[in-house]
Length: 133
Image (cartoon, rainbow, N blue to C red):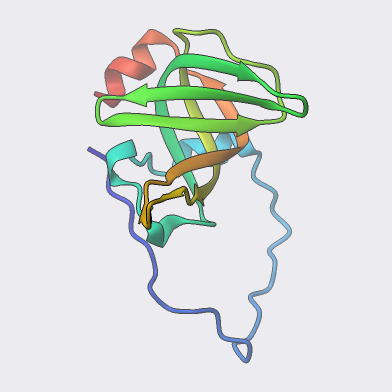
């Protein structure tokens, strides 16, 4: 099981800006260095933060602008909102994106869901999936 460490401090407007080193890391390489979060461990602390999940595509839903697809890992299911083409059902993916929460209030109870605004995705081959388990 992967562990993600998150800072608890709020941005400080008076903090000095870090200087850029001018080094650009391609998103495919950045995905290799970022920890994967299990779906059951998604929390409100991670909303609006970039996270990475892995799972198998269960469902697809084309939209007027963009697409939705649902992935599942061993701990749960998560909808992914993307501007790219739909992945194949059954494909194993690593998806990086910004976690969002959509509140759904019924009779005063919030039964909302998390979803991921996709930034990038890669297809996992069987050896990568086995190594992750």
